Length: 140
Length: 225
Image (tube, rainbow over all chains, first blue to last red; front, top):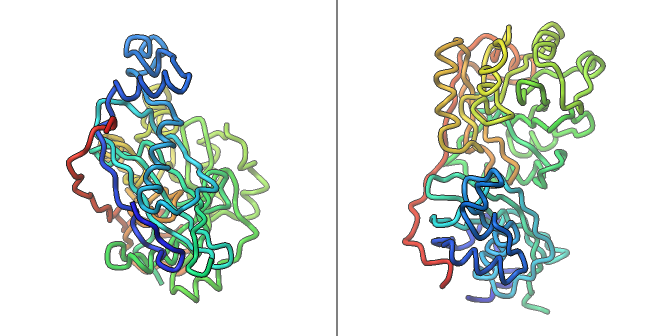
C-alpha cells in the first residue's frame, strides 16, 4: 500500500484491480463475526429454502471489499461516502474481481470521485457503485 | 453530426446515478480510441429532463447530446425517443405501470418512437413477458446489446429479433462515468438532432456496436488471505 497525494491523482487513473477467490468459509466466518448468522449467508440448503440459488455474501461484505480496493490503491484516501447498487446476488466459491477508476477530482475540496465495482470471470458486474474520498495534499 | 451514438445512459438526473454529463464527455474524450462515439442520448428513469441544457457542453466537447426517457410498463422497460409536450401531457412518466401498447402507439402517433430496452433481462425485459402475453404491435426495434446485461441476456435477444423482425440497437445503460459508451449504435446516416434520430430508428439502417474490453484476470488469491 502507498500514499498518494491529491496532486498525484489524475482523473482516469485505474485503481489496481484485486482478484479474489471468495470462499464459502470466508463468507460464513464474516457473517458469524458480523452478527449476521443467517442461513442465507452460511448454508446452501437454508438459502435455497429462502428462494436463493445458494448461500450469498452479505451486502456489507461486498461494500467492505470495495472499500478495500480503495484502501489498497491509496492508504491515505479517507472514504467519506460509498454507495452501491446490487445488480445480482454475490455467490461465493467463485472468482471475483474488484475494479475501479478515479473519474473526477475537486480541487477545492481535495476530493476524488471513484467508480468501483465487483464482477465475476464472465465480466458480469454484480455490484456497482461510487465512492468519494478526501486526499491529503502536499501542502497540508 | 453523429454516426456512433450511445442510445441509453443515465446521468445524475436519474435517482440511481451520480454521473454528471460533463464527466461522461470527459471520459469519452479520454477513451476516444477505445470508444469512438459521436453522441449520447440521456435516458433518465421515469422522467423527461426538461430543465438541463447541454448545448454548451455539445460545443465544448464536439458531441451530440440528446435527451429521451426510460419508462416502465407491464412488458418491461421502454426507451422513448422524441419526447415532446404532447407525450408528457398524455402520460405520467413516473407511473411504473404504464401500458406498453399505449406507449408504443401514442408515442408513434405523437412523433416519437418507443423501443424496449434490455429485453433479455428477467422481470423488466420484453422476452419474459412475451412468454405470457401476446406480442406488442408496432415495435420497430429493441436494444439488442445492453452494457449492463448479464451472460445470456443479450444472446436471448437474437431469437426475439429473428422471430419478429425487429431492428437492433445498442446502448451502455451506463450509471457510472467509466461505463459510458461501452455499447452503442452505429447509424448509416448522420444524425444531427432528435427528429433525425427518431426517423432513423423507425427506418432502420443501424446496428449495435460493442466496445467492451475484456481484461485478463490475474490468478486470484483466496479471500481469506
